[in-house]
Length: 125
Image (tube, rainbow, N blue to C red; front, top):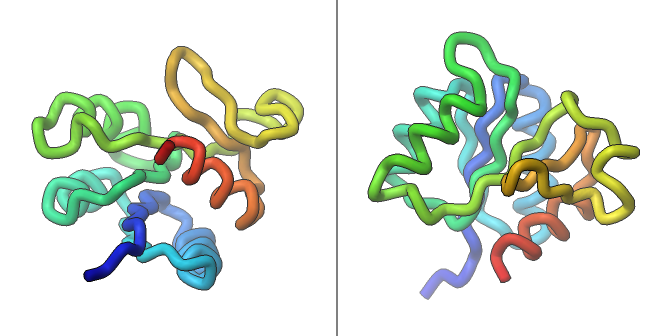
């Protein structure tokens, strides 16, 4: 049986996805990536990840709009989402790296692997 937690990273920056995927896989997670909100929503419904890391600013469909679709879909409504964004600064998210804004989880870019792992573990508790 596979106990690896499955993470879905949705971000239009392919280099960011490449490095985050590799770093999170090295810490024991299974990581799926999508470079658009549409692709990410389809993957989330099909693969049902344990956590979704979602960029806010993306072309065509924003991360906020994608999250609304995910929260309204019966297959994905209970999957925790962490918005990974440059719209907030490290100063705004504080020492923990993970901040709650309007009841949603946010982490500021640039983000370290340790910050992501900590944030993922926090929302999985």
